[in-house]
Image (cartoon, rainbow, N blue to C red; front, side, top):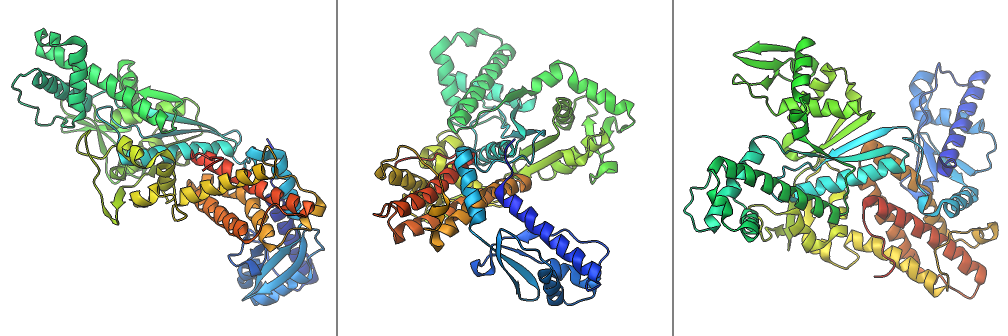
Length: 560
């Protein structure tokens, strides 16, 4: 897919050196072990501790029955000369710190220049087919802010998986069958008659949002009072279909405006109308996975990790929500996905074990199905909980929020914490154009770099680097190139751990380094080589900022 990532090559090189050093010590009889543990090399938090560090000596201490520092001394004494390493030190109880030459940074710059906007991509997930299903809000009303968080999370994870070489598909499950859609029809029918002056007893369980009046007025503008002549049951069915189609079209439009475009919209009705639910139910029975009790049909989920068995079909013959959900998930795996990831709302924690149990019962490996929870959001203004205008109903809609702060700020703020964390969303901060606003600060760094290249009379960014340019780098420039060197691993880890906030944190750190660098020196100076060296570093930072923002679904402006 692409040439080997430089940082991975360096890490592999250092690991190989450590393995050889341990084997030499073992052969010499100074170090005893039966098997080397996995060698972990990490970037030290403190710059004075080098570029990479390992705790291998500490891990070997118990099996080798030696003090960690003594083991570290043996390993370091047997390390071969390495073209990338300028110094090795032992720190603390036995950490081994590696200090690298500029050679690895030169190779990083070469890779960035070659790959440009593709820099950071890797082949970790090549050949993997992954499906992400997220938002899937009932088409009975506008989407809320939790839906907006789930949309940002699902869309960004798909981008991360694709950056790692996977074939990631986005899917929306349309809940267009059952009680809720029927309730929408009855609610809209009542509002239609109200708008035409009739006295109406509104359904007790009906939806009361203002958006239903909007829909009712749309119908009246198109057909007037013509539907009053229809029998009530037929009229309700007409309104059910009209309301569902209008709300679904609105959801599709709002998500597209948010930058979220799905590969597939899957209708629950298809499962019922095509007999798929009935077929799956019969298969569960034939496999001996069910039993009847008190007239209901139960699935033996307790045998597969759930805390109790679950009802598939009630005593009056109706299937529960669980049954079509099983059919839908089996349909997903039947389409050839290696991994299926669902993103659910905060009230669905308890549903996870039963769905996992059902899939395991049907022969799906547990590792092939994951559920992420997009937690609640607390909106704050002036440091206090804030309730925005609720014109569309008794909740804050996704559109309300996006109109308030914009797509870029919304997506960044939704992604800057782990998905399972409750999020305090500061509206004032999200709208501000100050350095305290993280998305503004990162975007401004990207725009500033473009401005620098314009002032240098260069039409586009460049990370071109030559050996003589490296000699012009000072500590701040080296620190910036070291930071961009780790970008591919940030993408890899964010995808592997399902944690986009690793990327937002990284981009903010990189932007902070760049702004600090910019304020301390001029980029364009009289020394042409020095100017070229600094432009190369700025160009590398620019490519990384743009690619990182693109993965998050956030704009990378050239002017601000």
